[in-house]
Amino acid sequence: MSASFEFVAPDHFTAGAIGPPGQRVFYLQSREKGALVTLKSEKEQVRALAQYLSGLLEKLPAVAERAPRTPSLIEPIDVAWIVASIAVGYDEARDRILVVANELLEEEESGDPASARLFITRAQAAAFVKQADVLMKASRQICPWCSQPKDPSGHICTRSNGHVVH
Image (cartoon, rainbow, N blue to C red; front, side, top):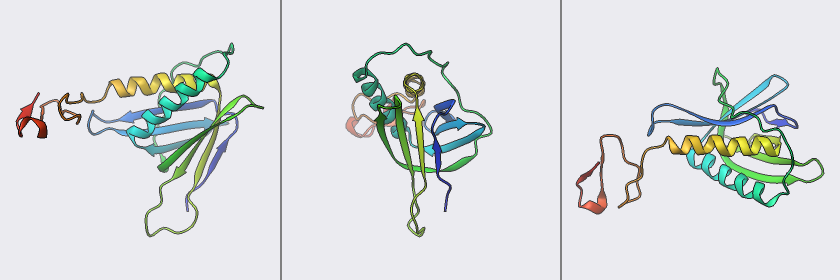
């Protein structure tokens, strides 16, 4: 059974990717009081979390909060577990955004999945949104005909009768 984490005031919260476009592995990472947790995630989980956080930040009243620099992954990358799902909430009393990631369990595993509960600031959420945008822009281009990612050498497009599209 994997470890669960709860960071009530993390000093680090980010997303990152390692590898060339099309083969990148995505991560969520947070740190509090020297304890670092890195979770393996899917690109679409990072994109969806960033989109949700962006919309949430637009709905909350503006506050004067020092924005952290856009954080990168802290090495070494030691994955605690793989993310299955992510939920977001807002703790109005503490003015913190709660990000909850739940562990993906293999079929043969029993027990409850681990979770990571991260209470981040609005500034950390805004920095995450910026970092996720950078990660998404570094992705492979999308084919305008079939909406699938194109490799640098092109790809066989089903909508162009199997011809290679560059």
